[in-house]
Every structure is written in structure tokens, then in C-alpha cells.
Length: 260
Image (cartoon, rainbow, N blue to C red; front, side, top):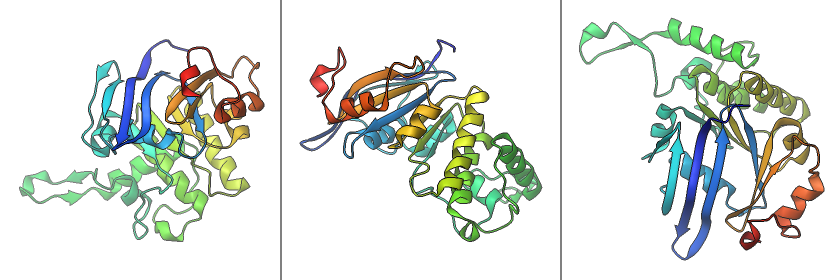
């Protein structure tokens, strides 16, 4: 695994008035590494993701992405920088087909000599969509089918395929299988493995302990708005019970005692 740091946060903090939702988060993700973020409800996981993706503005702290300090004004800035996020809500347009959803807001146009008017290049978008689906091993029988006619698993896979279509530098998935069945969950997990084989870094927010231990290299635990543990699970000496201990505060890791 490379030592190149693709994402780093220093003292990342978010206050909502008197509520300290996130406090002093120091975090590093190396290129090609897959990290799971775990914690109880309200522990600060989603707040952390919202800060690094520009959904919300941080109270203080620094975000370094690709070796450079960044300050995203919104999610579009983060996407343009190379951070693709799959939120639980998916943010898909039900009445549009797969290519239209993948290129929503980033449409490919042609005939630019028409001045302010542009024609959409549907052929180019379809070809790019098929390439993105192939890269992630996503199988959609008919990409011209409207999103509303697809299963939950297919919809989730379409959202994930956007990350491959636009050659993201970092993929973030927030509980991608929370509402899926066993077969659909397996399909999403296979996509995550495909991204790992391609050497693409990923942050996975998940409550599924089995899934986390199957898919990632490290587990970063949040508790009461702070990072309370950073665990390398590739060595085999960390168990699910250990992770639960850090989540509940029954265990502490050196250097993180003040988070308990």
C-alpha cells in the first residue's frame, strides 16, 4: 500500500450553536486504502462526511485533499475536485434513465457553434455509462429504463457507478446497503471489492460489522463527536467485540482517552 495521503483532516470541527457535533477530528486516508467509519447514532460520522464533501461548512480545522488545502463551497466543488459521494438518499432522478442520471449536471454536449444553445451528445453519454458500469461490474439489463422502475439494489448500483464514470479520486459511501436485501447487498459489496482491486481509495460509513471486516483495511471509530479509535484490522488481532467496546466507551485507545 502506498504512503501517499489522499485525504487528511486536521482539527476538523463543527458546532451547531452550543452543540459540538464534531470536535478536533484528525484523520488520514492513503491512496488505495479503504477505511470504515463506525460509531453509534449521533457519534459524528455523518457530520464528518458532510464537512469533507462541502455539504456543510466547518467551524474550524483544515482539509487537505490530494496534497492541497481545500475549502469546498458545496458538493459540486467536491465532485469537481474528484470526491464522489453515495449518500443514503442516493439523489437520483426517478423519471430519468441511467445515462441521464449519471450525467445530470455534467451533460456532454455537441454542436457548440450554435452559440448559447447546445445539443446533448446522447451517444457519448451512453458509451461512457456502459464503460462506468463495466468498470464496477454493475449489470443493468436496460440502461434506458427509468430509475423508478429499478430495484433498490439497481438504484444503489447506479449511484455507485457514477464514481467510476467520472474517474473519482475518492469514493465515499454512506450506509450503501442499509436498506438492501441479501442479494443486493452482495452486489454492492462486490463493487467495493472491484474498487479496491483497482487501487481506488474509499471511505465506508457502515453499522454492519461483518461487512466492515470483509471489506476495509482500517476502522475509525467516532464517539460523542470525536474520533476515539483508529484500528488496523488487517493484522487480525482486532475483533468485532473490540470495535463495539470502542463505540460504547468500554474500551479506550492510547491518545484518544478524552473522546470516551
